[in-house]
Structures are given as structure tokens and as C-alpha cells.
Length: 106
Image (cartoon, rainbow, N blue to C red; front, side, top):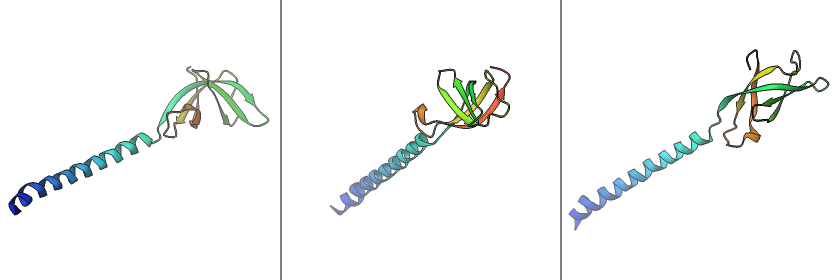
């Protein structure tokens, strides 16, 4: 009986624990990757300027409106490249503008 426990049960339980531990590490790493925020580019055009509040309002190719501060030299119909952060979610409504750049192409 001692040989059976030493030769079969102990290796089986040890192997099962190792497999469960590895699966746990894999699951944790997959969740961490999915929750990581990503940046992406978005082309938009200036549709309005609020000089009083220093706000530039732009519309992207899908018709969503975005705002950022800094009217300065912007003009209606200027093409703007937005670098967006998705906040680690699938919902576009919570995305934020990281940076803006004027583009002559667009």
C-alpha cells in the first residue's frame, strides 16, 4: 500500500497541483492583458469653436463628437488626428483624448 501511495497518489496529486497553478497563472495573465488600456488614432474634423470657453469640438468619421481645450489656431473644417485612450474598456463613450495634431491630409 505504501508503494501505491508513493508511486501513484503523490505524483498524481503533485502533477494536478502544478497544472492548477499553471492554469491560474495563465488565467491571471489573460485578464491583465484584456484590462490593459490601449491607444489608437482617430481622424476627425473641427465642427465648432467655443472661443469663450476655449473648447474645440470635433466630429469623427462615425459622427461622434469630441471636445478638447485650446482653440488657438484651430479653424472650422481643419482635419485633426486624435490619439485616444480606450481606458481598458470596449465602450467608446469613456474613451479620452490623449493628444491632438493638425493634419493637412484628411
